[in-house]
Amino acid sequence: MSQALDQRAPARHVELAGAALAVYNLWYWPYLMATCALLFVPALAIWAVTAPFDPRRRLLGKFTRIWGAHYLASVPFASVTIYHRERGENLGPCVYVSNHLSLSDVLALFKLDYPFLWVSKVENFYAPFLGWNMWLNNYVPLKRGYLPSIMRMYRTCIRRLAQGHSLFVFPEGTRSPNGELQHFHAGAFRMAARGGLPIVPIVIEGTRDILPKGKLRVKPLPVWVEVLPPIHAAEVDNDWKQLRDLTKLRMQAAQRALRDRLGRLPSNE
Image (cartoon, rainbow, N blue to C red):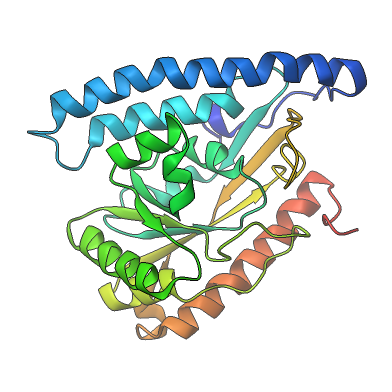
């Protein structure tokens, strides 16, 4: 079966190092900051014009996904390859979950072009332009480790799902220190089980070295995103713990299989 254009394996990759990588960063960071400032203007205009008749922010969401994805999918020396995108389409309200390796995960996942709302730590919402656009899109903020904020986030997510939105959650809560799946928090699975909604597991590979935690050096590299078959809450009798455990097992298996196909060693080896 032939794959769509955004699913084709990238051509042989040229990996930058040394002076070439330094020059790339001298271009990339000013480009990112300048385009964030410029593209926030049409985002604000879209929000203002469409708010009265588009409460779900469909047009703004589409613009945001194109904006965010291009920083990884369309810049020189980088690429995003997507496998089985069709598995996550036309499901109605659902909860997407993926492993979390890097800040650049968000840019890769925007390439999926699914209409979802992010659940993200509140600090991200205050980042100039990109963070302000998160407010415009009605993404859901969370102050990690603060129970009142967690409860408020949970209630907001339940309300958004009831309104027909889908959500995207990193169930590990933070970036993995070694590339392997960490403990999954309950929230995404409680929400899906409560609403009888599907979980759509997604596996990312390749982002960890693009922007390592605590570093400001961007290294353009290929990224692979695989969408797994949805897991419907009814498969586990709407038991959130079973839903969580089954999701993690399938993601671990898919992660190993993807690495095998790509010929990549686990990140901690």
